[in-house]
Amino acid sequence: MIIYWLLRQPSRGALYDVSCSKRCCCSACVRQFVETIRQLNTFVVHLKALSDAMIFRTDLRQRCLALPESDK
Image (tube, rainbow, N blue to C red):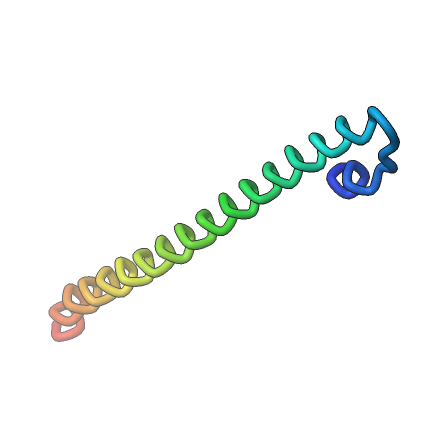
């Protein structure tokens, strides 16, 4: 909301330089924020893939341990 407000402010005369610099700074911050979120999403997907593999291996071990007990 604040970003939208800053970008939509009317700029006149000397205020133009101030609002333009705010706009540039704000857009750079937004771009950096979006890139950070993108990297975090990639990291989370990678972690989910690793956790699925670990859970699968754990299930296999538990099944191997459970087989001798079911034979009794």
